[in-house]
Amino acid sequence: MTGTPVFNEVGEIEKVVTNIRDLTELNELHDQLNKALQLNDQYRKELEKLKKKARRDPDVILQSKQMLEIYEMADRIADVDATILILGETGVGKDVLVRHIYRASSRFETGELIKVNCGAIPHDLLESELFGFEPGAFTGASRSGKPGLFELAHKGALFLDEVGELPLSLQVKLLRVLQEKQIQRVGGIKPKQVDVRLIAATNRNLKEMVEKGTFREDLYYRLHVIPISIPPLRERREDILPLVQYFFKHFQEKYRITKECHREVKDFFYHYQWLGNVRELSNLVERLILTVPAKTITLKDLPCEYRETENRKREVKSLQDAIARAEYEMLANAVKRFNSTYKIAEELGTSQATIVRKLKKYRLQTSARQ
Figure (cartoon, helix red, strand yellow):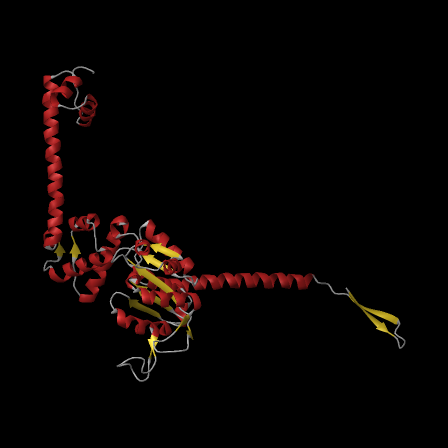
């Protein structure tokens, strides 16, 4: 109910106009609107999830608990602009994770993912590549100048691979970009504002480099905001066979060749140490598909260096079997000759506790209970 006073000519209230409304229906409409807005927000979130799944890189093969947790965290931080530092051995899939983070982020719609390997570009050229240069900045420079990779990655993401290879002089400039969000071209006098998500990766121990003075401590902590460590393939063996299956399918389709893998070869793939990680596994599968003439790939088709590793394993296993057989025969003869574990221990030059444990292992027993 609302009341509106009506005044006469001398300013006195002459009457009050009262308006009464039943708000039940209006409140119901308000509640329905709120529910519709909540449902709309829920649908929007589900749609965003579907979009991210649609953008997911097909190279992402996840089976192990460690990798599932890493990629779940990557999804959570995809739209956070904090710097990410990805750590791991060569070939573990750092670039694949970076691509996934970029695809899952809103920057996928607004900018490019620019990648640069800091160890592959000479140090004297790296500065101009990263920050660009003005016309005539140095001898041989283009007359029109050139934008750097930071400018090209504006509204997107810049991936600095092998960031531990950056010289100290460039580390200072990179720190300025992270702090002020500005870059300055070589030969330029005016800074430029850039909006870039920085992702760095290295297989080196940056903490040790900081202690040795080859990497700036302040830059280390700027990069180390969200560290992600990818374990080597030998520590997540659940991923090996799914990766083998993926690579077999990929290379068979690529080269239009049909091959199958013998069970013993799969067993080899699973137990091999893979010091080159996923990259080494991919290269070996591609090599086998292209070079083996038979339809079925067997252990004898493995390259020499891999066969030698397998043979050494078998030799070690055979040696262990021979030692176990010799140990069993010695104990079995000793049990026949002596009726006491103490006497057997004295004869074989070891402790009585060891003899008791060995007899139990080989299920041998003396006539006495000592």
